[in-house]
Amino acid sequence: MDVYDNFIRSVIDYPIKGINFRDITPLLANGNAFHQVIMDLNKELPPYDRYDKFIAAESRGFIFGAPLASMNNKGLVLARKAGKLPLVGYRETYKLEYGEATIEIPKDAIAPGDRVIIIDDLIATGGSAKAMVDLVRSAGGIPVMALFLIELRSLQGYKKLGIPVVSIVNYGIHISDFLQLQNCKFPMGKFKEKVNETEIKVVYDDGTEQIVEKTNIVSIIQKEKDGRLTYIRYRD
Image (tube, rainbow, N blue to C red; front, side, top):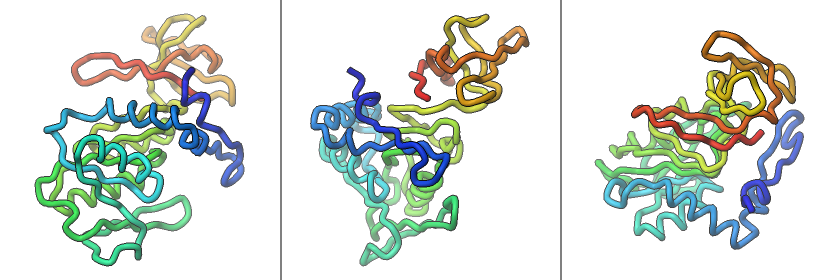
């Protein structure tokens, strides 16, 4: 059983029309599934001696940051909404779709040279995650990587961060993603554009193009700097 397919619920047109909201509350409500999430996130962490702390965003980031910090005997820095902390060390303001938001970290929570992992439940446009990266750097710390349960890949928020980004569950694809395909002209192609809700256009190495059904996408293929290929399960 795939806990993510079974326990992440998609809610159509929430909070506004056209949005497909990924609801993690069923995942958290099931003890076995929640345990699996924490174990999967823990597998993605660097070796123990290569980081010092986590920074987690209010509020869902706390759900994942706290058990990971406890398991690994690391500190946890709370990035809170403005006005929640008695002693503010640093603050960052970032843009939302409508308006802006500010997050703050406690005074002395990050010491110069601290190696910090950014963690949250989801990365979309990357605004809040980038704000946490900037908070770490403002305090003199070193952002090591960013770790998320969910990534909305089509929004390409990871590009804002400038550090390695790892997500356990990916939804969607973005332009120029390499795709592993089945029942198509070639077994691998590059995503060019969306045709409609069920079809996309891909371009192959020989320059030819083909409109393919989304159901023919097997995986997203991510090429690492060392040439290694990582296959990411595709979820629409």
